[in-house]
Structures are given as structure tokens and as C-alpha cells.
Image (cartoon, rainbow, N blue to C red):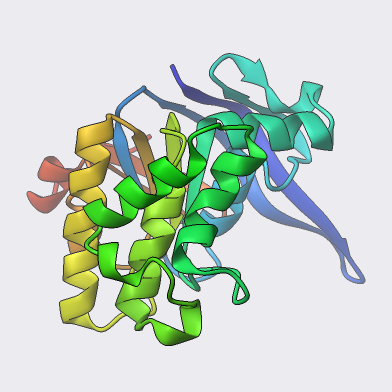
Length: 235
């Protein structure tokens, strides 16, 4: 398995005592699989995504990425693992305002030491339909164009895993649909493992598997097709 968790928990200490954000979660995600994580606000889905990506550390339990236990790594080593194997797409785009579209896409490849960063970035921006926007800054691009830049940036360096947190959350329905289509098209081409948090049920159903979270617990995991038919396979 490319991603595995064992008894994964997240707790924080508050003035009222210990708050359990994530209950013990055991999860396996295979290479090339597309997985959606759904649930109400506050259910823990974004926290789970952060732990899987190594952006946050678990209170208990383990996350393994490509058989590497994240808790065995220091922050620098986790950052290197992310640079080598992981791409990210966020709801708020998180482009660097002072860099052009081309420079934003080049940056992860340059940080990873790629010698052909500019060529990779140009090709990816062409794929997402922004060949004529290479030298535009984020504030000169529409929301949909900014998210397409973010998708191109996520795929630079051909990551094994792509984590997406509400990738169409800030877009109108028409633009969001176009960005969805582009995301899944590029993901299929590259064979990347996609793990996505979304509140959009239609978007979730495009993934091979849907994980449902409630109050910090993973309560359902099922193929998207059977979810549409109302199956109740409880994990």
C-alpha cells in the first residue's frame, strides 16, 4: 500500500481538557487509487488529510507513505519526502503573489533540484490551457486560472500522491466543473494517487472510493458506485 495508517489519533489540550479531534483510524490507500474524504464541517476530514500529508503530526498511531513511517522523520526529512513524492492543491490556491504563473509552477521543481524545471512548468501550463499566461501574476488571473496554475504546480515533478483540500471550493459551478475535469484528466494521465477532501458529493463520486467521517471517526468506506446505490458497508 502506498498510504497506510495504524490507530491514527489527533488530540489537542484545551482549557476544558483533552479534545479528541480524530479517533483511532486504520486506513489503506493503494497506488493509483482515487479517494474522496467527505463529512460535515468539523468531522476531522481536513485534519486527517494534514496527517496523511505529513503537514501535521499525530498524537498517537502511525502514518506510512511508501513504507516510510512519518513519525521516524524530522521536519526536514518530512519536507524532503513531500518534495519528492507529494503534490498539493488547496481551496485558496496559495500561489505566491510576487511570482508569475510560470515561476509559481517552477518553484517546487527548483526546490527539488530538477534541472529542467522551466521546461516542465511550461509543458504543464500548456496542458492546463495557460500557455498564453506564463508571465501573468496571480492577481492578473481569474480564480479558475489560478486554480489551473495550482494544478500544474501540483503535478510538477510527477508526484506519487496528490492531496487536494476542497479544490473547487472557491469556484463557481461552471468553472469548478472545468477544473474538476482537468484534475481527473491529468491524474489519469500521470497515474498519481489522489486523496481529496470535498463537501461536493458529485465530485466525491468521481473517485473510486468515498470515505465518510463523523465526529473524528471514519465510519464508512465504500466504492463510489455502490455509495450512489445506497450501500451501507461500515468500516
